[in-house]
Image 1: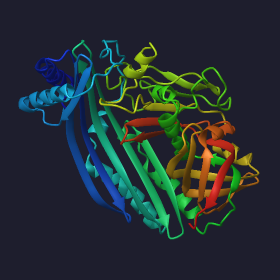
Image 2: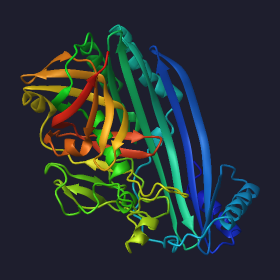
Image 3: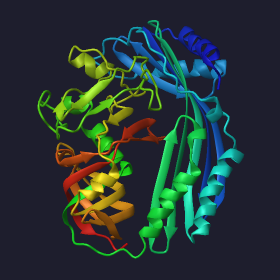
Image 4: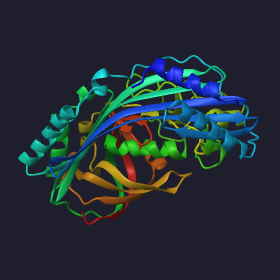
Length: 447
């Protein structure tokens, strides 16, 4: 961790080196450590410390971007020069108007010293609980535990400077028998909140109950989607539907639907980068403060997220959802949430005459973006619900169903939520469980 003062000095140095009409500097730093385990033993413990400076220069309407993780004065000058050379070779962007002007940014508390200083020994202590509990039950444990401290800063030649430090801890485990498996995960800014006993108990219980599954016919079922599965629904809605670019390019169902009912009236979905119950980042990669954006309110389409480029096409203001330049993917929601309901999972189960409990999905892929039609498989805990009770494990299903249809057929929403973090995209999601009618399973696996 370099700290705000050193980073501000660094980005100012880069800005001073640039002779472009406009210049932007994005700084990202990470101190991350990972403990990975398999066969109920730790087999890998690695750590990474890295920084990146990304420079975007603007000459008229020509734009160039270059980056480096070498922070020496010579390397910084070389990065600026490379960005300039790239810009000179580009075609003019007729839609470009300007980098963002400075705006007030409300700080978000997301840095936990204990997580930043979490040691390999501390991670090993947590993992040892999972492995020991698995061995005690004749199971095999696998998974990973990551702790990380992050620094993000954005500055530009128009006066923008934004800095944010954050931390996260993310742990997942699969417990396996020769005939079944169970899954559990947990994410939080504070690594001390990880409850290894509870994670082990959840995954072991599923693995033991999942032994010797029966085969059921494919078809339409009422499903209880645990939070692990629900987060997949939000991810695909984010990628396919809730971006202004997707609307502008006519491949989002939100096109022409604002103000209309598009989901069940129990469903409310939003994005809020400064929320206290997420892994916050209060500004985007252009230094624009993140606004809370409501996508769906009681089933009614309300809005999508914008970055500077997509906002300028419509004469709007960015909502603070840009990705790092160069970016052709458009704006991206990184702190999505689905509002909880008032029904405990136990009550959901009691209301189901015949249905399927789904722990999570995997290998999910897009079939049709406008319909949010997705195909994938269930995994690590799929069970039959009969007459209000979870009775038997079933073989995993392949599904091909519209997530939009699923959210139009929500019978009940869980009364608690769970936080998830994707270290690849940096996105955090908070979701409850869902009880959904008419979920389409199209095939049955052999396991």
